[in-house]
Length: 158
Image (tube, rainbow, N blue to C red; front, side):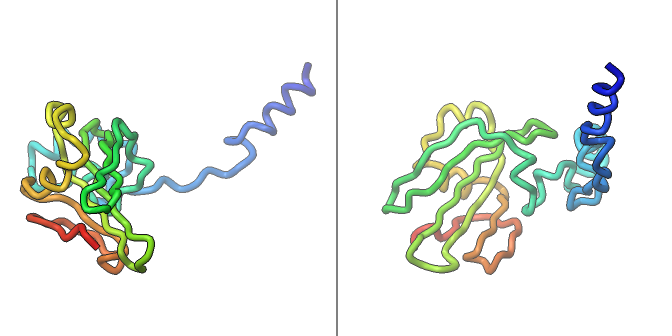
């Protein structure tokens, strides 16, 4: 019995592998405390990003996919997803397109969406929804790997 317990202790990943340093969100806050700080940060400064999901370079690991589809408009076959932030639970509409025959053609946009809008939105309506938002996040190889925030229409067709 003791030999088995010793084996389990050695095999336990936290005991055998040194822990990695805590990763900070682009805003400088620890991802674990993101949700706790959100409420007080919004009260103090509504323009201050309260969650890592509000940063253009937020990791895909911050989200879980709620719904997905494909927009076949003009042959673009864009990937349309509704993701939920694991920290603040807000919904994000993500629209991504890439033309395989052309280098540096990949582009994506991500903007907030409400529960009611998710139910009513078809994949073909995603670009129009993003254009109506006060601002949305964008990025991809089309923009030389840069990401940022913008308003208005984006060029989606190749």
